[in-house]
Length: 273
Image 1 (cartoon, helix red, strand yellow):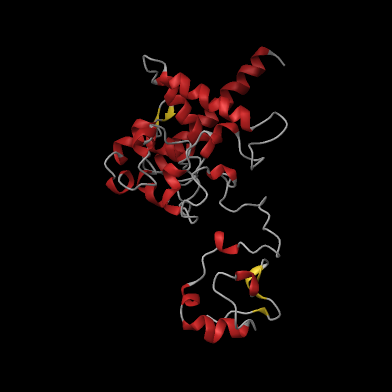
Image 2 (spheres, rainbow, N blue to C red; image 1 turned 180 degrees about the vertical axis):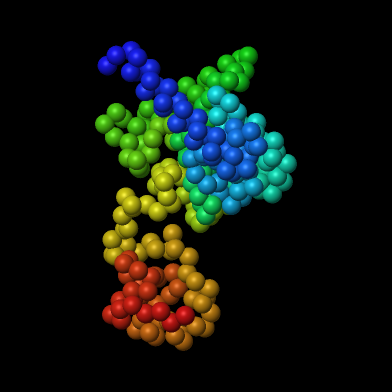
């Protein structure tokens, strides 16, 4: 292709693009001169609709984004620094010291999506980063990091995951789950505070959990009987339905099966309430 022809093609493309921008700008009424305003550019560049909570910022990118750097925590803090409901609740009070928002709070996913997506690994990275950025003169933070990773190494040989869960990563293991989840401990502290013995950060259910065999008679160690079992209802209804009139409240194995609480031995699924 000759230089003259290439130049002509380039000029033609430039003219077409300029005309398109001029038309869009003037058609949208953004600017009488026909040159697209910042707002018009933002509408074209938006990666998606904001959530309902942030919808009022749809055409004000600068409220959250900083040129070149992107979304910065300071922009978020400008609006959320005084949210007492967030900072005074035990499960969310840690936000006061995190100083990093976009790892867990995601936007432009649609107006019906909540701008939160908890990432425990990101939270662990934030914590370790804080230890690095705020070193104490006596090296306490460095020792804390060393102790944490030494402990992880002892509990997680190279060939397997953290003891109790193969899907629990070393960095997630440094998290103190109780800090945020103490109010949701259905075990009433009976199993201590090392949640990682059984749980992962992806969900509270335990896919690796294996219930003791049906022959086990220690059910009451983990399971609390419902209030009705401590009333006349237990002798008048529950025990009779299970055909175990002499059963005691703490003898769960006399009536129940491990498949489901409503699966009664010799009766099948039964739900009176």
